[in-house]
Length: 553
Image 1 (cartoon, one colour):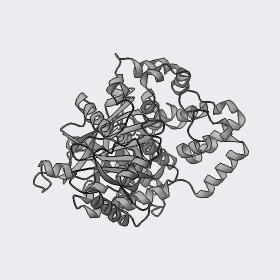
Image 2: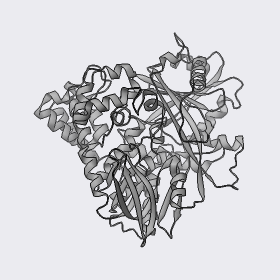
Image 3: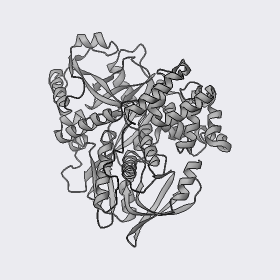
Image 4: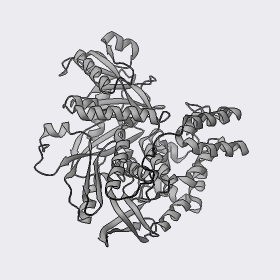
């Protein structure tokens, strides 16, 4: 934890231009944007980065086709353009994928009507993706025999995008980019409260691992605490125009149900969109939409049965999926932004189901305080740019205001990486169990940091060996994670920097050859303690918590 400890020691050293509280997607892009444009930034989170809402998504970057029904055309247009921009900016991480939708007889809209709607959706995205297709029942049977078409009236196919790796990895890459541009970032550091003092924000913060406290001084304070934003504002005496409501959503990860690289799409029994999403050699199914009062949620047997019942009805499986087939679970809340009491987005059930994932940014200009509400992965670049504009309006100097703070390195950097990889025959080191070449995987995960890995493998080819059996993580990647990725707990690596905990059964991980060696690389003398912390039922982090309980915004 040398990098983290060093960063914590730097937090009280100066007055930052901005302190960002919350290291989910909104906080991560705010840090990356501000630091890239030249501001001095501190970023803290009481849990791990992307350890709460941002680790529980569907792994999709999509324009929100469902919002066409509620007439939120402006939001759909904005999100479609944001999706296109993410695909352009992150060609290895965000990629177009087809949604293969089947519509049952008696549904409130006919397949033909919905297919026409996908053309509207396609036009809202400037025709960026492949064109929609109408699917007859016969074509569905021919192209995707796993779909049960007994009650089908037909279907359609259209495009959106997905994150090739997991959502929390995508978020951390923004945190890493922010640190590369000077941000002082530290996870497991909680805010104890902030106050204004002589025109500067003074935030008391505590390292949850050591118990030590520090004071962080900043010209502006950005509340990016996701579902905890309202509580943080209340503690700091800030009043805002907006607030959050919470919708719980779950996903179940099971064995692969189809080898086809598309997302099977249905309308569940409750009428909401329901997805069967490819996840390498696994399948992710969901989601639900249940109003809850607290951001702390868990998967219930009722949730599991709802998802399993809906999927078993709609697929031709040799053996129906049961609870015993669940490899991992994702459960979190969607922070839905509404105006405070009196807004016409009331508490009625119809309004509740139609609430969108738009974002709002409330600004207290007199106190240089910013609160970010709502939002989703698709819209992240817009959030970063908007926060930067607000910072400039509040008097924060941005000497590199036109700097493009997001996106993968220039194409020439990628071509040089691939040239070096070919010269050393990197792909010959690819594990036989891997589903993609080593060269493309390392670039997607680390972009220009992958050059460091090439150098290590050239020096010592054993660095390309898979360290944890049953995964595709190499020895040199674990060493890079130790140096650069602020890993405090084993869960940080297994669940967020990688998706090992999402695709491999927990008992298999626990007894995997090489796991303890990886722990020794990551944690040194604390290896056994961190291993026990993650796997021991009597410890603070129990198996149920690590799979079901979300963590920081």
